Amino acid sequence: MQAVIQTYKAAEEQGIKTHPISAPDVLGLRGVMEYGIEEKISDAIITEVSAQIPEVFALFQAARQSEGAALSRILAAQLDQLAVLIDAAAISAEARLAKSGDLLRNKVSALLETTELADESRLQQELALLAVKADVTEEIDRLKAHIDAARLLLANPTPVGRKFDFLMQEFNREANTLCAKSGSVELTAIGLDLKTGIDQMREQVQNLE
Image 1 (cartoon, rainbow, N blue to C red):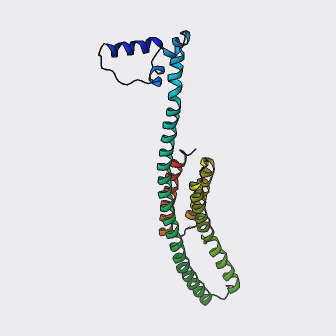
Image 2: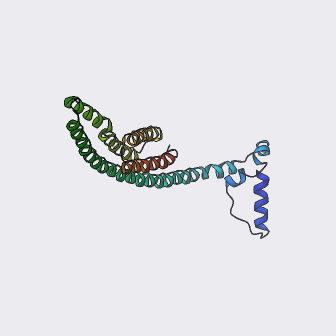
């Protein structure tokens, strides 16, 4: 190590133009760590290296904060996009429910008019059961709750990577159920867009601490 520094100083004394060098630069040179230990490290070298440690850590911390702020903005924008899709899904589901309800009622009325074997109360029960199976209100409500939870995590100054990753799994589960129960082309398309957005967001979440 001393040999490297002496060579650098000698070059400066002879007027040879060199780039600024720091302790990390010296330590990064091939052979310094392998053979430098055998040399007696002077107090001056130790002092010089030690003096640069706070600056190195400060730069490292600043880089982390900058990267974290950028990642937070990306995740916030992705959450906003998911929220828009969830609202669209709610509107589509409501319109689908009204349309399918009218369609089913018309079919039941036609069936009751053409046969005496149909049990009206039984048919009404079956219709109610179908409506419950096709209802996506709970899925949409849970997706909205997940949006709120994700925004709280983003505002949390402590490490939230694992919690966020688990939350993305819950997002995906609800989106899958929404698609399975959609019953309409429009709602299915929204559900697929939602799944795509969730996958993209989950890739970013993997970078969280």
